[in-house]
Length: 257
Image 1 (cartoon, helix red, strand yellow):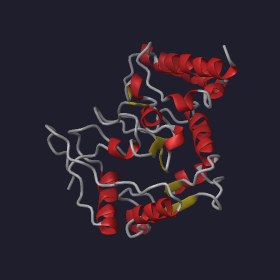
Image 2 (cartoon, helix red, strand yellow):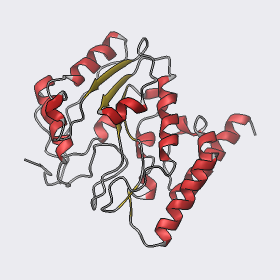
Image 3 (cartoon, helix red, strand yellow):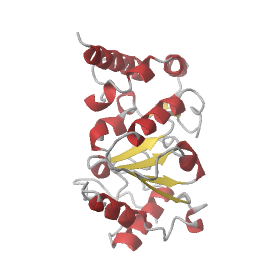
Image 4 (cartoon, helix red, strand yellow):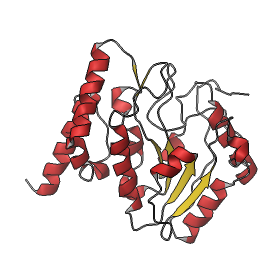
């Protein structure tokens, strides 16, 4: 067995244990070997122990174990065009599914995502989607990555400082090391600190306020990040993102007014 295959299997095994799953863990092949050392690191072992203890204590953890790495499964490393960074998953029932800012079909669109849609409408003329399910973006190369990948139900930020941040720092570094130009959409001070090392001579870094209703009017609304991202991608031969979200068949709209 070669070193690459060994690293791949080590990473996959560690990921399965971390998520408490067997063969149902989903992690795209492109991430496994590059993240193998991370999965084997002491902070990830500590994180695994923490999550197991929380579940043993009867606490409900979001998202589901097989969705912890959903962002990495839908957006392979070699296909990343855009990075959007969030903080931690939504902590309400049925919301989180492993992509930052995104909610499952039929769930009411959260306020920050409503503001993202408002800016898309202003920027690109795209009508606001009637749902908050963003997998269409992820499948095109938009890495929708939270800094912390789990949360306890009804307790925002409850899993911060448990090891996830080091793991997702490594993910951001891997993307920043890519030769192909990437767009980093850094909304809010937290995201801007996390990706502060990105080489802006190679990649496009677009900074603004966070789309939260508390800060969106301080620089997010009117920043036109989507057209800027597409112009950069097209200029560098990487192809624009289709930001318009398709309707979901058989799903009731989850609009937030």
